[in-house]
Length: 166
Image (spheres, one colour):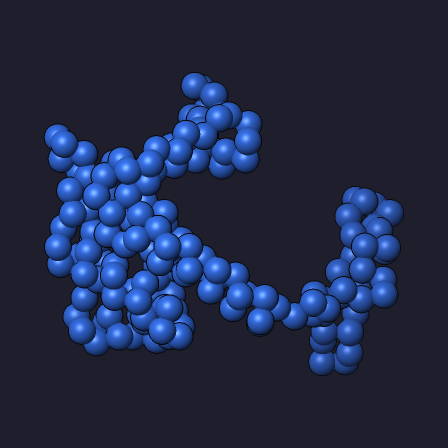
Protein backbone atom coordinates (compact mmCIF):
# COMPACT_ATOMS: atom_id res chain seq x y z
CA UNK A 1 0.00 0.00 0.00
CA UNK A 2 3.02 2.27 0.32
CA UNK A 3 1.93 3.67 3.68
CA UNK A 4 5.08 4.28 5.65
CA UNK A 5 5.98 7.13 7.98
CA UNK A 6 8.18 9.66 6.20
CA UNK A 7 7.20 8.68 2.67
CA UNK A 8 4.30 9.10 0.27
CA UNK A 9 3.90 6.68 -2.61
CA UNK A 10 3.44 8.37 -5.96
CA UNK A 11 3.83 7.56 -9.62
CA UNK A 12 7.63 7.80 -9.30
CA UNK A 13 7.78 5.55 -6.22
CA UNK A 14 8.45 6.66 -2.66
CA UNK A 15 8.80 10.42 -2.16
CA UNK A 16 10.00 11.90 1.16
CA UNK A 17 7.45 13.76 3.31
CA UNK A 18 9.68 16.37 5.07
CA UNK A 19 7.84 16.75 8.39
CA UNK A 20 7.45 13.00 8.90
CA UNK A 21 11.05 12.37 7.81
CA UNK A 22 12.16 14.76 10.55
CA UNK A 23 10.23 12.63 13.06
CA UNK A 24 11.94 9.47 11.78
CA UNK A 25 15.38 11.09 12.12
CA UNK A 26 14.52 12.24 15.65
CA UNK A 27 13.51 8.68 16.62
CA UNK A 28 16.79 7.18 15.36
CA UNK A 29 18.99 9.92 16.87
CA UNK A 30 17.21 9.76 20.25
CA UNK A 31 17.63 5.99 20.44
CA UNK A 32 21.34 6.22 19.68
CA UNK A 33 21.72 8.92 22.35
CA UNK A 34 20.48 6.42 24.94
CA UNK A 35 16.77 7.15 25.21
CA UNK A 36 14.39 4.23 25.66
CA UNK A 37 11.30 3.46 23.62
CA UNK A 38 8.86 4.89 26.19
CA UNK A 39 10.95 8.06 26.60
CA UNK A 40 10.98 8.62 22.84
CA UNK A 41 7.22 8.06 22.66
CA UNK A 42 6.65 10.59 25.48
CA UNK A 43 8.93 13.11 23.72
CA UNK A 44 7.07 12.79 20.42
CA UNK A 45 3.67 12.99 22.09
CA UNK A 46 4.77 16.07 24.08
CA UNK A 47 5.83 17.72 20.82
CA UNK A 48 2.40 16.85 19.32
CA UNK A 49 4.01 14.70 16.63
CA UNK A 50 1.63 11.97 15.53
CA UNK A 51 2.13 8.70 13.72
CA UNK A 52 1.34 8.23 10.02
CA UNK A 53 -2.40 8.08 10.73
CA UNK A 54 -2.55 10.76 13.41
CA UNK A 55 -2.35 8.42 16.42
CA UNK A 56 -0.21 8.99 19.53
CA UNK A 57 3.10 7.15 19.80
CA UNK A 58 3.72 4.01 21.87
CA UNK A 59 6.78 1.83 22.41
CA UNK A 60 5.75 -0.81 19.85
CA UNK A 61 5.29 1.79 17.11
CA UNK A 62 8.71 3.29 17.94
CA UNK A 63 10.30 -0.18 17.71
CA UNK A 64 8.61 -0.80 14.35
CA UNK A 65 10.18 2.40 13.00
CA UNK A 66 13.61 1.48 14.40
CA UNK A 67 13.53 -1.98 12.78
CA UNK A 68 12.25 -0.88 9.38
CA UNK A 69 15.08 -1.01 6.85
CA UNK A 70 13.04 0.89 4.24
CA UNK A 71 14.30 4.17 5.74
CA UNK A 72 17.78 3.38 4.36
CA UNK A 73 16.54 3.58 0.77
CA UNK A 74 16.62 -0.21 0.35
CA UNK A 75 13.66 -2.57 0.00
CA UNK A 76 13.25 -6.23 0.94
CA UNK A 77 10.48 -7.76 -1.13
CA UNK A 78 8.37 -10.87 -0.48
CA UNK A 79 8.71 -10.85 3.32
CA UNK A 80 5.26 -12.45 3.41
CA UNK A 81 3.41 -14.62 0.91
CA UNK A 82 -0.07 -16.03 0.33
CA UNK A 83 -0.43 -19.58 1.58
CA UNK A 84 -2.71 -20.44 -1.34
CA UNK A 85 -5.18 -18.69 -3.60
CA UNK A 86 -8.24 -20.14 -1.83
CA UNK A 87 -7.57 -19.25 1.82
CA UNK A 88 -5.55 -16.11 1.00
CA UNK A 89 -3.79 -16.47 4.36
CA UNK A 90 -0.60 -14.42 4.64
CA UNK A 91 2.46 -16.23 6.02
CA UNK A 92 5.85 -14.98 7.16
CA UNK A 93 8.48 -15.95 4.58
CA UNK A 94 11.15 -17.87 6.50
CA UNK A 95 12.96 -19.08 3.40
CA UNK A 96 10.07 -20.95 1.76
CA UNK A 97 10.20 -18.52 -1.18
CA UNK A 98 13.02 -16.28 -2.41
CA UNK A 99 13.25 -12.73 -1.02
CA UNK A 100 14.54 -9.88 -3.16
CA UNK A 101 16.75 -7.09 -1.81
CA UNK A 102 16.68 -3.89 -3.88
CA UNK A 103 19.41 -1.35 -3.11
CA UNK A 104 18.84 2.39 -3.60
CA UNK A 105 15.19 1.89 -4.55
CA UNK A 106 14.29 5.37 -3.26
CA UNK A 107 15.81 8.32 -1.40
CA UNK A 108 17.01 7.41 2.09
CA UNK A 109 15.87 9.24 5.22
CA UNK A 110 18.67 7.82 7.37
CA UNK A 111 22.08 6.46 6.33
CA UNK A 112 22.65 2.71 6.37
CA UNK A 113 25.43 3.09 8.97
CA UNK A 114 23.03 4.76 11.41
CA UNK A 115 20.43 2.02 10.84
CA UNK A 116 23.04 -0.69 11.49
CA UNK A 117 24.21 1.13 14.65
CA UNK A 118 20.61 1.17 15.92
CA UNK A 119 20.22 -2.56 15.21
CA UNK A 120 23.40 -3.29 17.18
CA UNK A 121 22.15 -1.13 20.05
CA UNK A 122 18.79 -2.96 20.07
CA UNK A 123 20.67 -6.27 20.28
CA UNK A 124 22.99 -4.95 23.02
CA UNK A 125 20.07 -3.74 25.13
CA UNK A 126 18.20 -7.00 24.64
CA UNK A 127 21.20 -9.02 25.84
CA UNK A 128 21.72 -6.66 28.78
CA UNK A 129 18.19 -7.21 30.08
CA UNK A 130 17.92 -10.92 29.25
CA UNK A 131 17.02 -13.12 32.23
CA UNK A 132 18.13 -16.68 31.38
CA UNK A 133 16.24 -18.78 33.95
CA UNK A 134 12.95 -17.05 34.63
CA UNK A 135 10.24 -19.23 36.17
CA UNK A 136 7.61 -19.68 33.46
CA UNK A 137 4.90 -21.15 35.67
CA UNK A 138 6.27 -24.68 35.59
CA UNK A 139 5.64 -26.87 38.57
CA UNK A 140 6.85 -30.41 39.33
CA UNK A 141 3.63 -31.96 38.04
CA UNK A 142 3.10 -29.67 35.02
CA UNK A 143 2.41 -31.75 31.95
CA UNK A 144 2.44 -35.02 33.91
CA UNK A 145 -1.11 -35.21 35.28
CA UNK A 146 -3.58 -36.28 32.57
CA UNK A 147 -7.38 -36.63 32.89
CA UNK A 148 -8.54 -40.21 32.31
CA UNK A 149 -11.86 -38.99 30.87
CA UNK A 150 -10.85 -36.40 28.25
CA UNK A 151 -7.05 -36.80 28.02
CA UNK A 152 -6.26 -33.15 28.77
CA UNK A 153 -3.50 -32.03 31.13
CA UNK A 154 -4.31 -30.79 34.60
CA UNK A 155 -3.29 -27.25 35.43
CA UNK A 156 -2.33 -25.73 38.75
CA UNK A 157 -4.55 -23.07 40.27
CA UNK A 158 -4.06 -21.09 43.47
CA UNK A 159 -7.19 -20.91 45.65
CA UNK A 160 -7.92 -19.47 49.09
CA UNK A 161 -7.29 -22.89 50.62
CA UNK A 162 -4.05 -23.41 48.71
CA UNK A 163 -2.94 -24.68 45.31
CA UNK A 164 -5.09 -27.29 43.54
CA UNK A 165 -4.81 -29.15 40.24
CA UNK A 166 -7.86 -28.84 37.99
